[in-house]
Image (tube, rainbow, N blue to C red):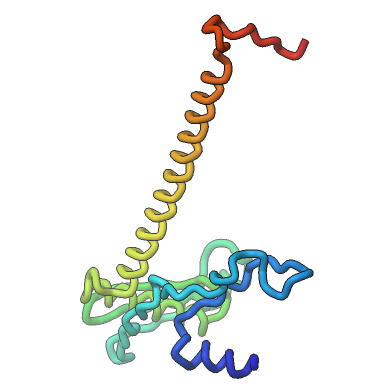
Amino acid sequence: MKAMLRGLFHNGPFRTVRVLTRLPQCQCQRWPVYNHHRLFSLSAPAHDKPLPPRLKISDADLTISYLKGTGPGGQKINKTNSAVQIIHKPTGIVVKSQATRSRSQNEKIARQLLADRVEELEKGDQSRTAIKAERAKKKKASKLKKTRRKYRELEDKEVESDEGEEHDSVSPSGDQPPPETQGR
């Protein structure tokens, strides 16, 4: 049964269905405490659109040089040529990477940075970095909107409860409410 469900959700027609797995289980029931009809979410995530493929840059267009590192990391960083500097000849873009102590990892990181910068120069708003930045901007705006809505609802509830207390404190005869005693 599990293998069949796994096949349906990974390869089959339900591959975009997300299973809500973090629902608390009640020990006496097999189903979660929440509504039984809300076990699956059929809404597709907003970020399902794949990013465009990374730009491939030929090695003939690059000048790669290995430099001695600087900054924190001690004597090892300062003595070895682990920092990588890549120059893209057609555009003149220079990228330097010293993220790790490994030369090969630094070269890989520098190539990715260079590809992103060249793509941003060529494609503008349609580049991977621009799309990622736009998604992050939308996510942040949505989060702020949700926060504002939450606090607005809390303020509305406080105002309603304050109005309710004012109506409760008025005596039926219309006189002033009795003076409140503070912890005597």
